Length: 111
Image (tube, rainbow, N blue to C red; front, side):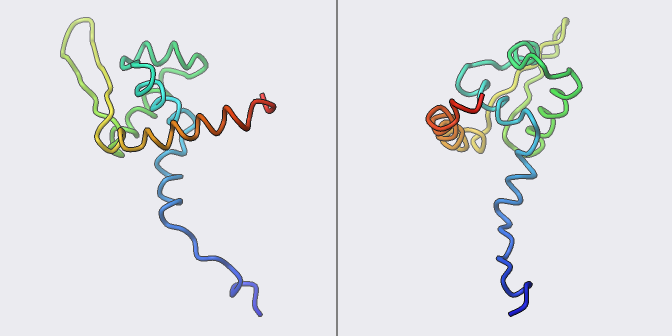
């Protein structure tokens, strides 16, 4: 039997999820927006700590483009922008909640 015959067909769903959520900070951003009611850029940046302004901007733009977040620009001075979950983003929160619970139960030794 050839090696190629043993290969499992690549799962397009998992590949797509990896592309969408593969950013270093995206899961944490979604977590804080949903479960900790943090919606403003500055508050997210303070919460994440180590993230640069440009990296946070990039991750938020990608989450908006991928349909997980809505960006609300209030057109005020000083600028005020908030992010909220779309219906797609809300539907993903059960997955994030499960991942957090699994991590709490199985990853405590790895820190």
